[in-house]
Image (cartoon, rainbow, N blue to C red; front, side, top):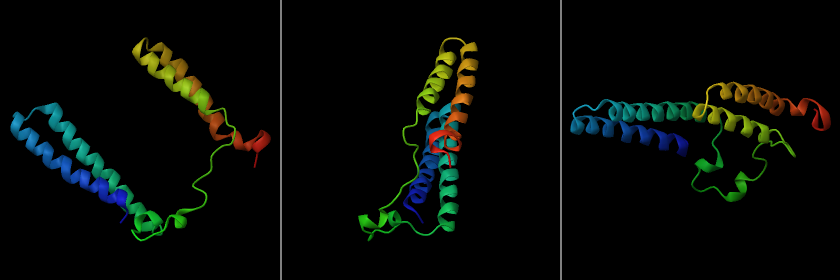
Length: 132
């Protein structure tokens, strides 16, 4: 079982009893009690997903306490070289949150910019200099 699975399951084992104790001492205050129980449920869902995923893949070097650092060497993923698309995507996220704070119609502009930026980010390796 991976360390992440143990971590999230232990979060479930903490938040649910704390939610019950909180409900007892506050007389059933709705918001805090519900929040603590939902946090425990979220930790259980993430822990369950990580447990199911860990069963399907081979053990990683991170899961072996006796593993050497060199066992985890190699590529950790693929990252787009010289990509400008994260910048307009961040601008779109800023515009959406700015619209939530100022005026809701600005969110539509941010959402449209976000869709264009996300499509550009996802498909940048299908055309141009880095096409596959």
